[in-house]
Amino acid sequence: GENVEQHPSTLSVQEGDSAVIKCTYSDSASNYFPWYKQELGKRPQLIIDIRSNVGEKKDQRIAVTLNKTAKHFSLHITETQPEDSAVYFCAASWKGGSYIPTFGRGTSLIVHP
Amino acid sequence: NAGVTQTPKFQVLKTGQSMTLQCAQDMNHEYMSWYRQDPGMGLRLIHYSVGAGITDQGEVPNGYNVSRSTTEDFPLRLLSAAPSQTSVYFCASSYTGPNYGYTFGSGTRLTVV
Image (cartoon, rainbow over all chains, first blue to last red; front, side, top):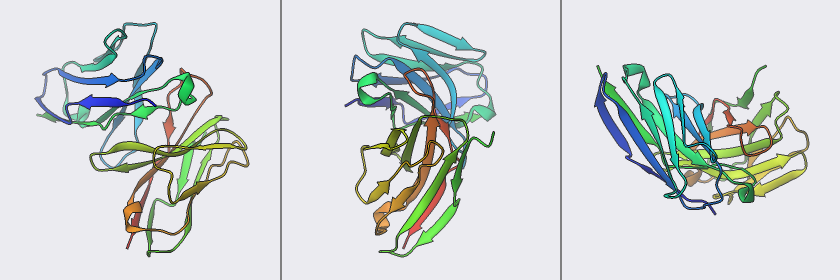
């Protein structure tokens, strides 16, 4: 099955800095890579995703990049704000796994004002 | 649209008791899954369903049972609760296929004493 590794487990930045979270996946057949944000005590919510035929996708201050050869993908947050503080999860899914996503263990992002 | 509705939000069980966590969605999603979230462990898949009448095991299925008699409902049954099942449980659903993210329910915090 698929295995998703996520780093770092904790990331502390100053407001206005950039933050980068990296994930690697094991199965080259994976073709969909969503990112979820979970605020304290809340449910995970989809914030951005990327498909295997795309190398980069942006949505305002967040962007995701995918390197299929190296089997890794990253979440980039620019101009961080205190409300970006949350746990972020990456995931990968593929047809052989019925497209059920496998999640990384999460990154706790702390943005200091 | 109510989205994904989970009940109850909180539950305390005694060891050996059984109970059912309810999950319902009104988005006509074919895919539904149950995850448990433990500190530092991310979201681990318990059971999933790709349509009414079809269920399969995930990464951590022991001690749990599911059924999917309708598209809308996907209950999770704890057969004989153990302290190791103390966790936050999330139900999630999505459309069929590779390019759709999950919508999560608000979660159930379960404590087994």
